Length: 514
Ligand SMILES: *[C@@H]1O[C@H](CO)[C@@H](O)[C@H](O)[C@H]1NC(C)=O
Ligand SMILES: *[C@@H]1O[C@H](CO)[C@@H](O)[C@H](O)[C@H]1NC(C)=O
Ligand SMILES: *[C@@H]1O[C@H](CO)[C@@H](O)[C@H](O)[C@H]1NC(C)=O
Ligand SMILES: *[C@@H]1O[C@H](CO)[C@@H](O)[C@H](O)[C@H]1NC(C)=O
Ligand SMILES: *[C@@H]1O[C@H](CO)[C@@H](O)[C@H](O)[C@H]1NC(C)=O
Ligand SMILES: *[C@@H]1O[C@H](CO)[C@@H](O)[C@H](O)[C@H]1NC(C)=O
Image (cartoon, rainbow, N blue to C red; front, top):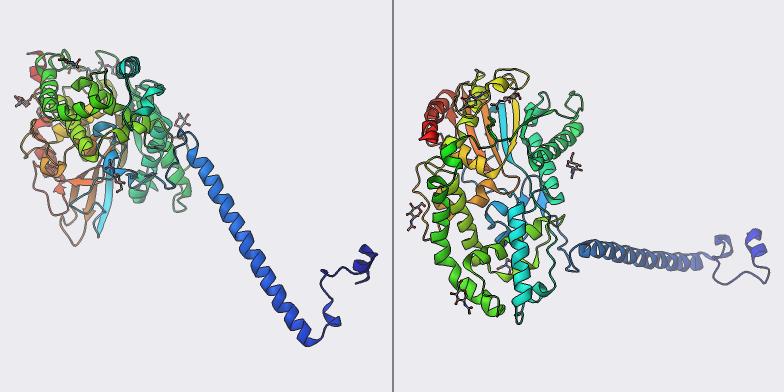
């Protein structure tokens, strides 16, 4: 202990611990208890400081990029459940909702005693900025409000200084992350196949779709790398891009069918269903908004634009922080908006449009080829040059991933007939998605929406070795209507293909030039 004394020439300071051998047994015990308590106190203080520091960091992070509004300290988007924050609003934004796992009456898990033999995903791109045309509309609307509002009601004050800062057409960072999550989810669900087979990936060639496909493959490969049971090499997956240029055949992008594309009769169906419904639900909401923004006089169409700014500003934030536009409307009003968007998709591109399902025929015929490993038979939108080559249309894969748009997925769901057998959507009164065969734009074609078609072979239970097919739309098992599905929502492969007669016969392709 001499070295301690040498450090303190004036004598040993009181607070230096006494060497134990200079103390009595009793003193030693008291000293140890004292030391023990002191260490405990230090430990508690240290823990407290650490917790404060972590909270502080989280808070700084939380307020970052969200105009000072603290972000909720929770993870909003996960691979399996999708976007779950503010679900009472964010699940009612039609096709502008971020993907969320849709409730399923049939258990979506792979049934016991079944072995997967095939999986195909058809995915919408992730969340994006508004299309260019819409962005321009929103800028005009914001300018009109700011130039004419005589005052701003409570909750509307932020509009006075709001600056439109969204881009146009491109995937947002939030949207990229959705796609990474989607790739993770697909790998994990189909791990038994994914650990030994390589998926064949195609994307319609618009930038946001191609980047979505890339981000999906990133998530997929991240899961593959973590899978120790797999010996597959970790290589970037090639993506076959199919041109959206006018006049070209592309099963992931409509555009060939003249009558459908040229406006008039067919495009009016969706517009008029929406207009009918808009006139019923918008006026009371608009009266409230206009009372809060005297001098502006928003029209019913302006109201939709104002509401659009909620989802678009939300998905422009990397983590989906709710935009102040969202707080301008109630939960009930968001449901009405959701239904308005559902009508647009259903009558514009889906089962409610006389030529909607015909747009999906080409892809469904490709699906049949993949399910049965037989060459594609189609005379609608497939490109025979692509589909006759094993390089660009292999038939021997177990996993396939295709990336497209909401409107094209609506046509494909129409051609698959999954919303057949229910009454057409009512354009005067909102229907719950459960009452529309599980259809709503948010339940079906949200940002990063995904349709899974899976094949399985089951022993002991149904099938006895026959292949069974089923379809999941965003995690919801949808029973096909044109074959006899079992309790798990599955049909025998043969019956499933037989049931797709509409597609096999080319839909109403002939009417495209009528
Ligand atoms: C998505 O893909 C693009 C293009 O490859 C890449 O630049 C971007 O970093 C990816 N995003 C994420 C979140 O990984
Ligand atoms: C079909 O695909 C080939 C190969 O990509 C392409 O060169 C051709 O232009 C396409 N034809 C049509 C009609 O889309
Ligand atoms: C509802 O929409 C359909 C399709 O546009 C249309 O045929 C029908 O007339 C509409 N009903 C009303 C009441 O507007
Ligand atoms: C608001 O606009 C409508 C037409 O969209 C018009 O009929 C109405 O008179 C206007 N109200 C006011 C207060 O300017
Ligand atoms: C959504 O639910 C949350 C929590 O249940 C509630 O605080 C919030 O007010 C609801 N939002 C709307 C617009 O009703
Ligand atoms: C493209 O589609 C058209 C019309 O459906 C068809 O006649 C033509 O043969 C297709 N072209 C190719 C290359 O498959």
